[in-house]
Length: 77
Image 1 (cartoon, one colour):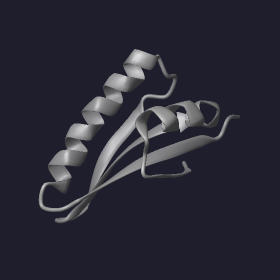
Image 2 (cartoon, rainbow, N blue to C red; image 1 turned 180 degrees about the vertical axis):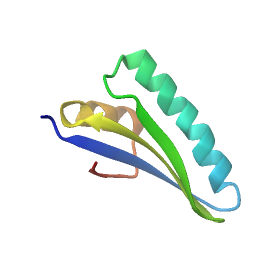
Image 3 (cartoon, rainbow, N blue to C red; image 1 turned 45 degrees about the vertical axis):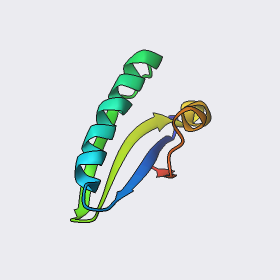
Image 4 (cartoon, rainbow, N blue to C red; image 1 turned 30 degrees about the vertical axis):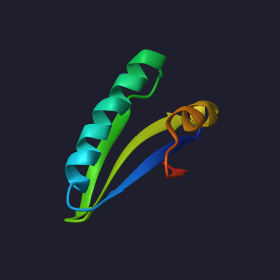
């Protein structure tokens, strides 16, 4: 079984939640365009000044996606 990697984009400030929510739309568009197998995306509001958007990719796809989309960080999913 292939490991899955969660790629994360951090957003800070008063509009962090809206920015993260909107960023998820672009992540979904990228998944469809690139025909990626996993379709796991989301956003989380961690507090009123900090939110994240994320997508989960298979480890084999991680480097290509990372180089295209420039996430801030990643972790094993």
